[in-house]
Image (cartoon, rainbow, N blue to C red; front, side):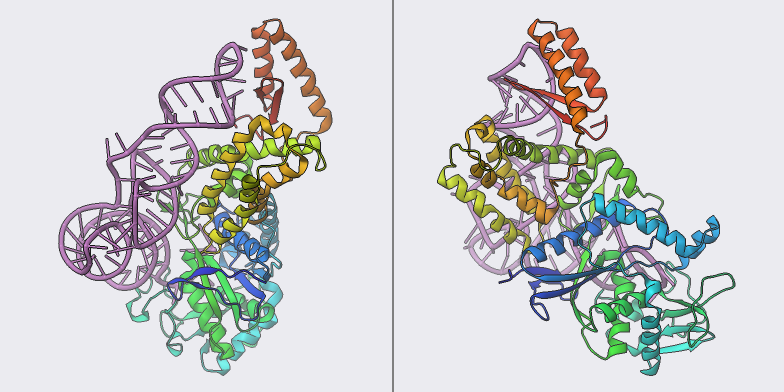
Length: 483
RNA sequence: GCCAAGGUGGCAGAAUGGUUAAUGCGACGGACUGCAGAUCCGUUUCCUGGGGGUUCGAUUCCCUCCCUUGGCUCCA
């Protein structure tokens, strides 16, 4: 019924078979963004990683509930809001809408619920109360902290020993804490800050507690799969385990932990704090969402991916173009003749390969989501398809559809080659281009290549790329003049 | 300092206890073209950080050293 697969579990430190708690259902939670500013391409990488995970699981017959939280209240939002004279909640909403638009362009629509932290205040307060009641937390003048010493497993996920930590290495230690490793569950509001009522006075939740309050409500005290960037392993995910298992008394919180590798910028982590970020929106505008998506998937999700300005995405664009070209041709052929077009059938072995390849690709992804391996295999098929070249015209509609099967797999699982091409020109535009092409053909026929090249150049400036073939000239609409 | 993940061709980046270590980019040659591009064919045989060990055989497993990246309490 459902396909078996294996995944690298951070807690186990190895690739192991995935067993859902209640097959075929899988509860998936991924730490989402804090929308205090425009997202960068590092955030995009994590989102695409888990988008493919969710797509693959669904294809394999699992019923996935994919939850990605939105931290719409936090210190950075407050600081930013104050600086810009905007309400932090409104600021969060604004940037979250931008995030959603980017996700839509990137074909990442697999999230079922984007819960906002502020919609789960009752659950958060309930969980903090439970932790206080069970002795895992303590209150100090309106703040509530988790006492890490009460939770012996703390540090298991990241392999850290609490004694070996260096307090204050990056963040200064809050003097109200009993121990430097303790973390805030509830924070008193300072004047002018957004605040919610609580048994400990008006304030707001700490960062870690929102996730476990949300998952307890939506996915239960225990669930299957938790994802996020590796930078969240410690302390965020350790804190989640400590909170949830402490509050519910049930363990483990999750059965599998997946962590996506960092996107690096010239060998350094891309982060606002480092000041080396490249915006998600501007990148999508510049190279197109599909190129960016391909760039992410052309590496293993756990490996660090090094971004080189002026090189990485340009290389990805070339690589994607090579892979996409034969499929574009195939699609044009299908559109021209339709599915019912008569013609030759495929040689049996070609048909067999085309039909079997998607299953082989599933097998590759079922081994810890090796998207790069799958893409490598697709290139092989692309070459086969390319060899058919002009012979495509002789094939039946059904044969053409069969040839496209591996690419349709890529659309379904990897989200590449979307049917909806944003660079599609409207019909009236197309007929204008056609007029120009006819003029150029006449010029070429009479040997006036100066005029022919002039037309070609003029069209190129408008973003139209021509390809002369033996019997016709095809054209393609590029997103921008640079491509 | 401690913990974690890595070091593979010109570059990016896979995989595996065993025939020529994938794939892409780039480069070069050829076909096609008025030219170019796109596409197709071919070439790019000397690539697994250093040093030990286990093994018939190591890039893979073990030890050690060096280097890079991430984390060390509100970073995806």
